[in-house]
View 1: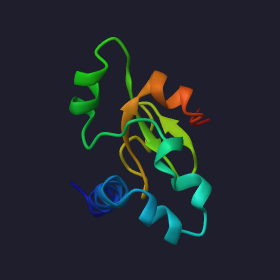
View 2: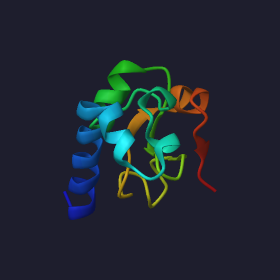
View 3: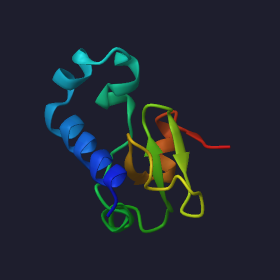
View 4: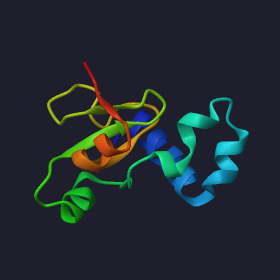
Length: 97
């Protein structure tokens, strides 16, 4: 695991644990409101277990984009976590170009 992955996982855990309190301290509160994000997971395996009929994407919540496994940013952005593709689309997360 590289440093950016560890940093992303730490940020994910902070968001999941602190929820609204963390969002209130950020300058871009709209992006970090947990109710505006799909259910997020620490690992791709955990996400796949929840949605076996869907594919797993990496959600970069600061850019509100999702990345497929073939994308070089899959699992490698500073802010993000794994999610089910359908849930992320329903939450308004757009696929990366």
